[in-house]
Length: 244
Image 1 (spheres, rainbow, N blue to C red):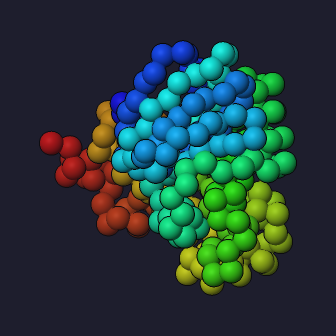
Image 2 (image 1 turned 60 degrees about the horizontal axis):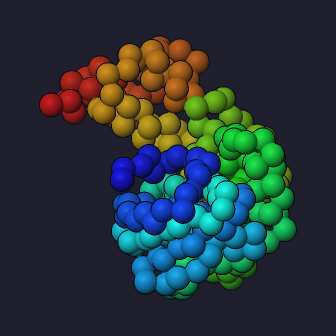
Image 3 (image 1 turned 60 degrees about the vertical axis):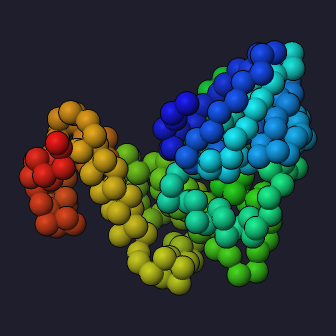
């Protein structure tokens, strides 16, 4: 079963057993009912007090009990290494839900959808639950900032917006990025936008103007200038060189 490795979704589960694997990490978070899961040979329930992390390539089977709904968060590839470091080798796929996650899940269940901002917060909270309070790992404020940037890169973003999402001052935000990322928030945001632009140019037939707007630029001209500055090619040249 192929899935978009940056997607979020609400899924319903029936009383039929199903199983699959996928190439990305995935959080399975409870909204209603209970989901019986076997993940890599370890069994457990995703219910009102527990959630699960399905690691990339882990075979997993699942069976819904009653009216079962879960929030599904596919972990972006850029965060796989950070998640692995945070988990610190732990292989138990099931973990307890804390109050912050509980309230976010109740909000999603009431709304019936995962808005991008809420999905960003839920991803940050899930990563926090896996990481706990690591001494040497990336600070949770940085993870919140990076997750927020991934979720909102298609919109205009300022350092103030990112700092607010990470619950830090702008000065602290720049300090975190300087120490842990080695570049400014705006430089990291441009990398995210360029990665998504390259993917869209090579894998879709969307117009360059559409891709410009979808990746957070005000118009095609500003996008083309940024793309050439970043890659050395115009968007059209890049598309011609990658499409077979």
